[in-house]
Image (cartoon, rainbow, N blue to C red; front, side, top):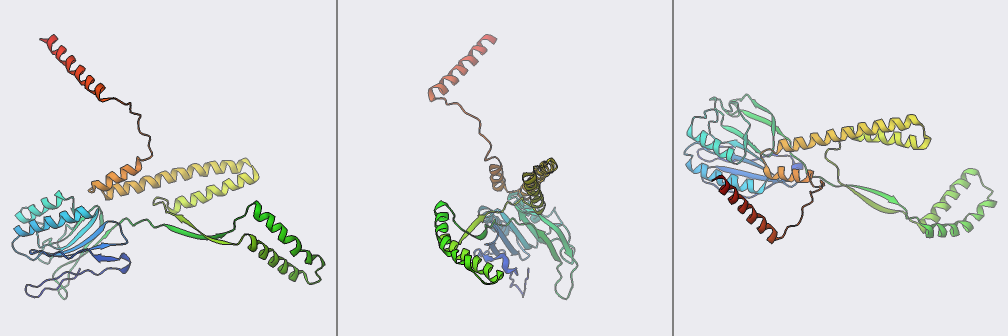
Length: 340
């Protein structure tokens, strides 16, 4: 974050890697603070906001900031708000600090900076996150040459959009008709090699070329695309175990030896255990990162329970429903009469 102040004129800016594909979301103009909000086309539902609030009255700021945050929460699941708020978060007894803390808690934000960020010893530069977890937070010593503020460094883990991994390959379409046509072509084409008088190398090259031309004429190579959506919990470890499992399977099917059959079974169990563990870790991380994001949590639970069978429910008509409650009321009345 970079800020230039000259008298009462301020400004906010953001320098980012072009691979993140940040685009300004919209130009928000507020009276009590300056803001720059960007969204990434490469990351799903991720907004990054830089804010500067000049010191002074705060009643209008709380109203405007509440309106601004409500709009962000409505449109995005993963949000980072950072900047100079000029709010002494190290002094929770101050009215502004208490009101601001209540506001951020209401919207499910977590404030990550706990150390002093100014040479006077106050925590006024903040990092607010919602739906994301911050880590490796470091507040570095300042230098009076550049600023009287400290440098804040932190890391966030942002879920990336799944990209389809397209694999291109070439193949031939072979069936009974193409095999018949190939046989008809090869009979006269290969007859000349019966009386060929050249070297073995030349004979081999010409014979291979003849075969290739023949099969290209009846079943030419065609470019095909295999679309694959990568599984997020399929790691390098599980991939290696799967390859080893397939290796033992192929050896057993080729040799029918019991030693390879046992090795295949053992590697298969090990692969399944590793896959379950990797999947558990992945969804635990997703749930932990989105513990303040009910929408994402419900979506995750829905995905995990989608394939589970739903219990059978018997059909009841409206008349049966009414009779049930009528009988229930009558039974309650009878019990009351008997107790009097």
